[in-house]
Length: 459
Image (cartoon, rainbow, N blue to C red):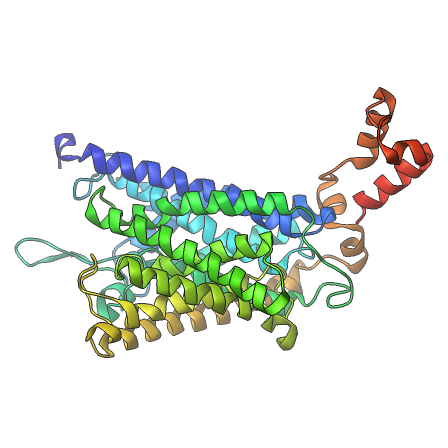
């Protein structure tokens, strides 16, 4: 294919979508960072940025080849050496799209999938071990699953098969448009496995572990929603009708999920909270990810509303099951991903770009059983392998920090930093007279201000 064959419009859309999805990882860092206590916010955010750094490198070296190289057996794995270091791809083009644009787009999916897991082990993980985990887990779990789900076989005009892809996409024919299985079920159940390996946080269920900065949480959720249009609509790989339908479905399902979460909160707790709004947004985005190409806008509303209520109820199960999933990765990503993937079998309509009818549109259970098998296969594979990886790392280099480190705060020990230097800030404000007009400064001694500030730093 010559450069003249490249569709510049589609290429621009994919590169823009890749940038949007890349922005989701810093957005996730803000979302997760605001949800933890002040003494661990930097560690939490560093886990997202660390995944961004490590997966960027290994994706180029062997990840893309394992995910999208020619299949080496039964649709389970791409050839790791075929495109090692992306050899031979810099001048290659696909069907109107430069291969390197596709490489970049898929890279950011791998990055955020790994980063999502970190929320389940907030406040108690060694950052160095986490960095080892990102490379090992991506290699053993994510890259093969991406091959199963995202790598489609290619048949030439003369009927010859020039490329063999993964088994879920080509043999099972389950629909997962943008990663309900490969991203959300995969990361959600991996988070469950690591939460079991690392155990519960010190003081869990006894001490208050409220989000320290809900402003960051809301900002992060907004960036995730913004970036998710690249995540879902970009997966069409063309700037056409499919991307347009997916864009609208993504918008409306997310809005419905946020409303449903807030209504559930209001009925159950008497309050609709900002944390609930942010969590509902993410739940809706997760659920519509696999189904955005196969449902109508009305179907997306119903799917999103059910996801919002379902995930709002599911996050409380961790207390009954006694599993400390710190930031509700399981309740939102695993439950939302399962629902969104299986819901295709109910709500899919042939009027949508995917062209398949689900149970509610006269299609019977044919698509439903395919969705269930695909979801469960990824769930079991990821849980078992992540459990093994986590146990090996815990027994060898150690994954969980010591209890005294956890109580002091992972930021100060692991990174020698503090997110908020409140003691120094109070001293600066006092020296400039900025606090002079406040009641607190008029009524409290100077040493009292420093003492209270120090307490906040260590909270």
